[in-house]
Image: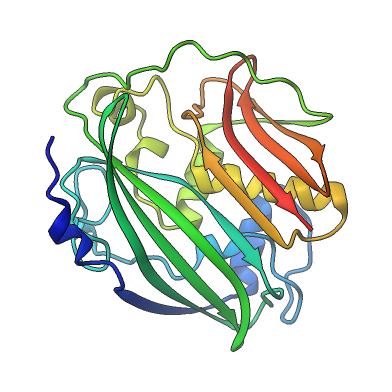
Length: 280
C-alpha cells in the first residue's frame, strides 16, 4: 500500500498532556499481576515502568476500530496501514515516581517515516513522553510505534528460520498464560485484540497465538535488571525483534555487557523476541 507521507509529517511537533493520580490501588494491581510484593502506601517509590499504565487514551467503546484500538486521527497521525504495534523505545530515569502523587505526561510527536520491509510497507511514528511526578522530572521515554500493511487472514510472514536464542548468564522462566495477558491489557487500558482474543489474533491478523505485549516484556526485563543489580537503571532501551506468543512459556535472560546488562526474552527453544540494554 502506498502511503502519502507529506500530510502525515504535518503531525510532527504536536503535543498532548495528560495527568493521573498514581494510587496505591493501581500499584497493588500492578504488583499482583507481576507477582511482586512491594510497598503500596503513599510516598513509597513506584514500581518500574508503571507509568505505562497511566495517562492512557480513554476512547469510548463506540469509537474503537475493529482491532480494538481507538480509530485513527486525533493526537496520533491517521496512518492508513491497518496493523499497529509497539516496536520499542528507551527510558531515561531521572527520579523515582512516588505513590500518591499526580503523574503528568507531556507527549510530543518527533518523527514520521515510511520504509519498505520484508512484510511490505512500514510506517514508524516516534514519540517522546516527558513524565513528571508531583511536579518533579521523573523520566523521559522514547516510544516507537510501527504500522504495517496486511489484509484479511493472511498469515504474518515469518522471517528466515532464526537461530534459537542463547541462554543468558542469568535466566528466569516466566509462566505465560492468557490471564497474564488479559490482566496487563486491563492495567494499561489496551483494547488491542491480539492480546486476548485468540480467534481474532489468528483469523484476522494471522498470528498462531495471542501476542505478548511489548510493554509487558519490557517491564519484566527492566524489573529483572533492577533485581540483578539491586538498583534502578539510569537508562533502559529495548526493541522488539519477533512476536512472542502465548503458545509456550518464555525466559528472561541477562548477560553482563560492560558496565551494563544485555537482556532479552525468548520462547522456550525459540529466537530472541525482545532485546534490551540496561545502564547504571
